[in-house]
Amino acid sequence: MPLKNLNFSSEEEVLVTGGAGFIGSNLCQWLLDNGNKVRCLDNFATGKKSNIEPLLDYGNFTFIEGDIRDISICKEACEGADYVLHQAALGSVPRSIKDPITSNDVNVTGFLNMLVSARDAEVKRFVYAASSSTYGDSISMPKVEGIIGKPLSPYAITKYVNELYADVFAKTYGLETIGLRYFNVFGRHQDPNGAYAAVIPKFVIQLVNHESPTINGDGSFSRDFTYIDNVIEANIKSLMASSPESVNTVYNVAYGERTTLNELITLLTKYLSEFDADIKGLKAIYGPERVGDVPHSLASIDKARNLLGYSPEYDINSGLKEAVAWYWENLERG
Image (cartoon, rainbow, N blue to C red; front, side, top):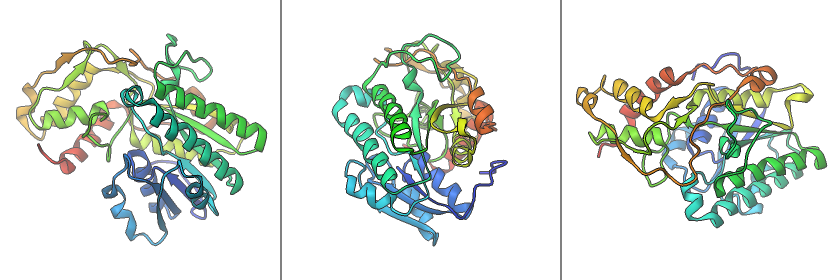
């Protein structure tokens, strides 16, 4: 993770919620490699023990198994922490449509538990995972932070409520908050299995197993795919931000380019065929569109660039090359 211009103080102790998950475990690894004390809170609902097993050898790593719906666990985890990187959530639009109550319990009640606990522990800053789903039915392109539409799924509602709560806690209690609206993050540790797997690892495992990947819709839907190292950069620079206007707000975290699902399949088959030539001939098959899906997503990253100094290093091509190499080494073949 050769991230540039990140000189975050190694004296700080950081709590990463959802630290055994995809994004959380990558954040834990970066912080540990840069000398920080790290606490990881996770209940393994979607996180994996294998993601944090390499971290257990670090003397400055503490793991707390627990659920953010339990406020006593949240208070225990926050006590004495300098910063919180709140990644714990129940993701997936389809999952929230199938079970909106559990998504709300985790993403709203759990989020509020963490805000209260961070406030009471007097942490310096609370940086949290927001979501591009907050833009909902807004047709403006690219997406800018101040213009959103109506949410299209229970998941999107929960992530917007997070932003509202964070704003209230900043104004009412003086808790510094920063929300990061992630746009379709991908990379190492992202789980390709299960009904709610993200599209890139799902396509990768299908192609690796010589199966035709299934696209929901005609493949024209587009996303601003964002490599994990860009997300790490945004989180660390959110911890480092010092100007008054850079805190108590939200930022898009993306690369600022969009790729259609058809283009994504072309790139994946190209990069994977370097490991297995038989993959090159595989073609996508098409199914019905998913309820709640946003047709197109493209972020303006001007605000993060100007206020955080965010300068993403990985575009879709360089990110996919890294991700495909990692998956090739780590995937269990079907």
